[in-house]
Image 1 (cartoon, helix red, strand yellow):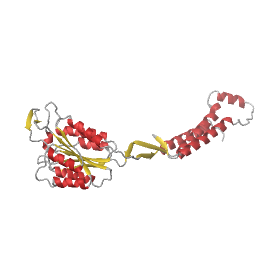
Image 2 (image 1 turned 30 degrees about the vertical axis):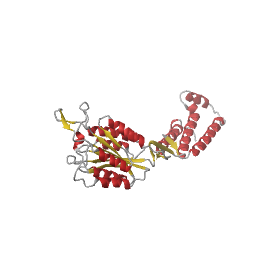
Image 3 (image 1 turned 90 degrees about the vertical axis):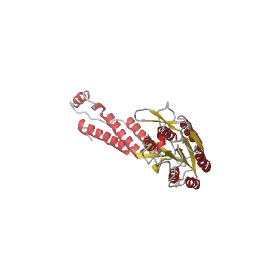
Image 4 (image 1 turned 90 degrees about the horizontal axis):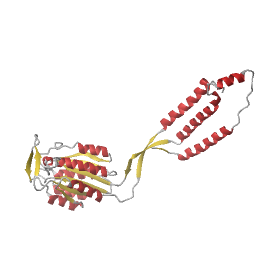
Amino acid sequence: MVTFAYPWVLWLGLGLGLLWFVTQWLRKDLVVYSYPLTDFFAAFHSTHSLVRHSHTILRFLRGCTLLIFVLLAARPQYVDDRSQVIVDGVDIVLALDVSGSMGLMDDPRDVRTRIEISKQEAIKFIDRRESDSMGIVVFGADALSLCPLTLDKKLLKETVREILLGRVVNDAGTFMGAGLATSVNRLRASKAKSKVIVLLTDGCPTPGDFVDIDQAIEMAKIFNVKVYTIGVGSVTEAFWRDNMGHLHSAGNFHAADMKLLKKIADTTGGMCFEARKPDDLEKIYKTIDALEKTKQETILFSRRYEAFLPFMIAAILTFLLEFILKFWWWRLPV
């Protein structure tokens, strides 16, 4: 999309240009003196070329050149509508459990693992939050911030797609306290009206976590961060698939600690959800999306880029064409 920084210059120039065209059109032809044989050669030449229309063509080219200069004076700019952002929205950090148990399946009829389903629904959630800054944190036996708060949805979705269970140490436990504290730290300096963490896990905090879960909850309260918690995984039976594609039962010992997750949500002003079946997670993310909507009036910004180069090239080309036709092709007098 092209717009102009000085539209009044554009309208003024178009008005003057229209006036110039009218005066040129109404202007009477100059007196022409005739000499012997010149009428014959002029008539012969004009029937085999565009010379008889030369003045009209040259005036048209001159008018095009002047019109382009008017457009340049109005300062043309490209407007990138896709870069529009809303200030003072909601800053969100997605904290995903990447411990080993996230590689299990909860429905033998659904071949997707817990982490695969979580990644797919997280990407859909990112798409729905068009105007909010978001970040990505993963945790297993350690915590890692994969992406800081950003409005670059393409980067966020690519980061989520590349999450693997081996991205951090995953077999030694679930350091939920470290994951929550790392997420809070990402939101600590945020100036947004609402700061939110969506924490998804299928387990319980394990010994050895270098951040106590109660301390992490207190950090969230201090920095006014709301935490939505999601416990994923069946409470009856989970499954895993070997390299040959055979399905095996993993028992029910990998259920999430819903009591703790409810405590985290209630203490910070969020909500706690259970995703026992693969389809539950989509409904939960949609619910969180509906709950966290900005209500304040916002200001839209858009990036602008100068677009003088194409117009300048067009002006040079029309001027050169007029010059070549007049002084070289038709060899008209000045």
